[in-house]
Amino acid sequence: MSIEFIGFLAHQEASESVVPHGPLVNPEFVGAYARTQECGGFDKALIAYHSAAPDGFQVAAYAARETSRLGLLIAHRPGVVAPTVAARQFATLDHFSQGRAAVNIITGGNDAEQQRDGDFLGHDERYERTDEYLSLIKQAWQSPEPFDFDGRHYKVRGHFAQVRPLQRGPAGPQIPVYFSGSSPAAVAVAGKHADVFMMWGEPLAGIAEQIAAVRASAARYGRADKLRFSLSIRPILGATEDEAWARAERILDATRGKLEKAAGPGGLHRIAPGQPQNVGSQRLAAFAAQWTVLDKRLWTGIAALTGAVAGTAATTGIGGNSTALVGTPEQVAEALLDYHDLGVGTFLIRGFDPLLDAVLYGRELIPEVRRQLALRQHPGQARRAAAGL
Image (cartoon, rainbow, N blue to C red; front, side):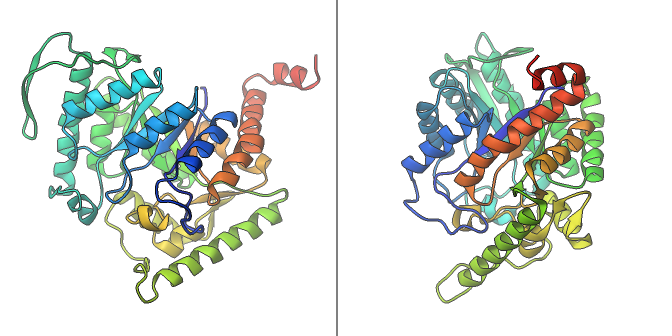
């Protein structure tokens, strides 16, 4: 199984531990961040979605101009933009980027966040709508002639799109569909539509459980062997293991200080650990409640501090994907490959110090993962290459 690395692109430098600075829409930072990841060997970069954030399509278009190879994975929320319009937007970006567009479907797990964009459907209804949304968007990409669509949430008559994606799937023009969501409703839709199912950084047993559930869902559509799986994780690297753990503690202290400052007069409300609404955050919070370190080096400190809440990323840099692998590049690479052994072929890695960590990942972590993977898959060939033979 091959391996893919996805980074992260934001409109401004910020994280759980880094206070946002510079202009809210910072072209210089976006360009530098994108070029750093392209030079570092990342295959794609995710552009996140939030109801208060700048538009992800615009960020992706700018990053496409600043790079030549880096793929652009845009988080997209069904129900905000009509599927036929979104189909044309993604297809157009695919042309301008020369086949580098991809979509991360995020149906939404927080009612208040959805309502800020005018969406008042309940959780399971949103996933029912997502099923229709993806069926319609794929038909818009692939149909060679005008078509009608009749669903509960969407109806169109005589739709035809002149622009189709440059990329192709088994059924014709199509942009890769990455899918996020951990609830039973999400798993049901993922099994039908996803090319890549994305998971947050859980212990190995939790990831194995999710992979089995999604494969069982996909089997109902004859797609059990078609899906790929992605893990989102936050590596914290050090020259030694002690140095890496010391850095993790500094990140935790900085995050705590940022939250305390946000709770002051006129500041943001502090995120208090509790029961988050979306299932992915619930799972991370439950794991964080068990122990600070799980498996070999899966650190839950930030998830425990924030309650794995994912609803305020646009203003505070805090999101639900907050578990980390802590250690030297060699140790973290080994831990990533433990997930690879379970069937994970894609790793979404982003740091708490965004630009600096992107440099470190490209220089030290990505090459080390590829080296260890080659040694596992082709031990004789890898040893000869290392010896210069």
